[in-house]
Length: 517
Image (tube, rainbow, N blue to C red):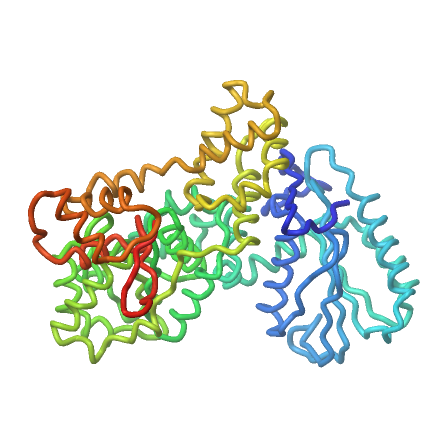
């Protein structure tokens, strides 16, 4: 069984698997694809969604983890009747429990026996209810054996078992879980789900980039920016995912759209306000997505003027059933908001602190899960799996790590490296080769660079010639010297267009701002 890795030395067990029939019944969700870490979090999400309780974080090892404990009464197992606590919840994940030829019985019983031994060692009073959640399909015989073991360890406790098919029933019965835990959308046949009687009409009414969202679902990791965007939408009805290219703004917006659509919302891609007004229907729940609302590679004043002119009307139409989500780079958003203020819509527009969600930063656990999900969903051979496993910590800590670069690395660059014989290199040489690959900009960043005009290019070249850090006043002199003429606007404003994209402008220091690479 796996044990929980420390973040400083992250390692993964990545194996190929197939979903197959088990006990004459095929599972709809590929729960094996989650791994024990994400399976525990799925259990948390299900419990919170079903019971509305603040479940403690699962911890400890991948065998069973630390207890999730709830003292009070809950409407469980009968959703219409309170049962007195305490409740003890535990998750048990068995690797490849549903793979071809899998025999998860002994692994599950072994883990339960070990847990029973730990239960007997605890001094805590036995709970009234013990709930075991597992990805293993529980046949009648296996269910009886597990209940027997747990009943011997907890003779006064009522035992509840939730196996793979039970969890699938919970997932289908709680469609809202698809929003809080969007990973599950990558675990089942989405086309089958979308063609269902419940969703067919919603899909027909919507205008949403379904194919891109479907491709993303098996690899997506909901970051803190994703969760915060959902929270902001719930409170303000309007949110802006903000950040540079490659950091997953569009991915988060697409997954919010897909999760909302499979939960009963109409979803529309909007290029401008006209699309919003054309699709708006007060009789349906609707989410409107405007990706790169003010332009992708450069600020587009026409779009900003359109939004500015109509925003007061749009904001008035937003409510608990109608939400608007923008994505934008910082510079276009700043200029767009300036136009909105000039148009007199500022009084109806929420403050930036209320609606902006910064997607530019990723935590170490988020990066680790991204690497795991991409590797798990790719058709890697044993050599590729070993390369990812052995270099996981350095990949995650690489300063050039972005979601788009990891996607490209796992799907294409890793295979290219191995085909060139990189798998036979020393560990240090291979790590260096991987680092070089991660430094290569994606096509999105390259396209963005190529779209820059002469003045923006002059700022970048002057900055590269000026060193790691300089004052903006020094940058101005270098820029005008390079381009050979005065700028059409201040060098400072041109540099601000590039902020959080190609460069970083630090906070004011003694009245002088500095630019950093």
